[in-house]
Amino acid sequence: MEWLFLVAVLVLGVPAWAWFAQESLLFFPQPIASTAHLPARASPLEVVAADGTHLRGWIVKGTAAPAPTVIYFGGNAEEVSWTISDARWPRDWSIVGVNYRGYGTSEGKPGEPALTADALAIYEAATKRDDVDPHRIVVFGRSLGTAIATHLAAKRPVAGAILVSPYDSMTAIGKLHYPWLPVSLLLRHRFDAVPDAKRNAMPLLAIVGGSDSIIPPKRSRALFDAWGGPKAWQLVPRAGHNDLGNDAAFWESVAGFLGQR
Image 1: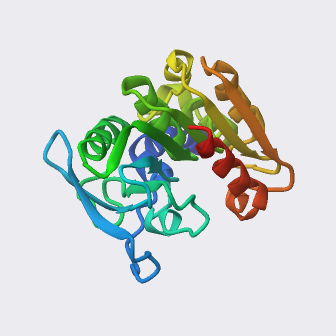
Image 2: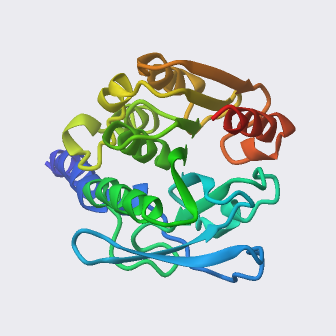
Image 3: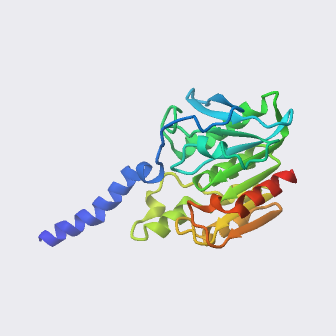
């Protein structure tokens, strides 16, 4: 009878563990270790979410006035100050990066409903600034942030979208990495980007690592194929999930796309 008990523990216990632990499997909040890497053009930006949660990040101001602006949404283990401080962004563009709930010094805890709602609040805060051109907003998502950027693009007018390592749904990614779990039944944070992608008519640039084992090109292609507007596919053959931005082709594609907006 002991084996029956063991089977019951495995059959019931493992899914129960996945249900209760899924936030810790999806989100990896990062603290701010330093801000010394931020350029002198960076200014703190605080956004108050719809529920009163204070979200904190920065705007790196572009040289244009008012400036075309990228709103950046990072990966699930990313503190955004490092990406928005990269010197390879086009200098005339402003870059807005606000840390997710629980990341950096932003308050709260991350979750799909909150993060998608927060994206709208960040957009509203950015477009109300005098130094931002509201007609030249581009959303930029990486990994986890691609579904958030896709949702924002479906809800607010933007001039374009750049998605790095995009995916069609977190359910599909979960099934890939946890094939022994009933992911469809367990997952609360589904980040299903396909319905939003179908509604989006603005131009898309998708940048994908050919050796990405976390979000394989097949899952990125599913989102890309669903996109309703004009689109360009940039495959970086030898790049993986975490080193995609190291390739010169990455920044050349970003600069070329922004230059056309």
